[in-house]
Image (cartoon, rainbow, N blue to C red):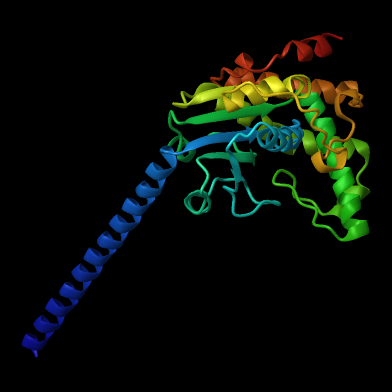
Length: 297
């Protein structure tokens, strides 16, 4: 009986060690394959486009598509996200690798990623890449986002389209019931922290790639010069026309500030607190004088 117990223990020990060894082999194979995909991506010519919402990012990407076609620029816009809607926008290495590997193009554009910088992204960047960071004035962004959510909520109710946001979890039926003040408070408290985190993350790191910072006014007023910088060649102005519907361009630069004094003060205090508690170079890419003037008034 003792002999059989010893045999059983030895057998269990061997099985356990064998299982651990197999796990190590699987983990190593997985790590090696992940590194292979990362190195593959690093060697490719890629333009990354990270943006805050409502910063004319759709307009920029649609214009780049048209300008590239008109100026014979070899570039393909590809997906790097497996899904959008209310999913947090984290780059998927598998999705990115699949679309690049199955393309005959030499240059790639990864667009419309609403994501702060993180350590995972840093692994993917190289000197073969360009990184576009697109953003917009805080007040205009908040106003535009509120108008956008109003419009999308009505579209869902009328046309049964999906209403979703990665920043604010609320149904279309509940959103339309809110007062203007309640909508403003939701956007200030839920979206604004993400906006500041985005700017902070992209202003502090050495990315190992060329970085192009674009604000809303740059894009609206200097679109052809921006395309020349992105393509590394002088582009010809081709009178490219884009419909407002195709680029989701609503009120644009003429939007009126409808926040009341208390809401402006709340936004200003939110930003001031963020700056006082974070070691950030956010002011290098963002002018806060506007908030100081608003607060003084």
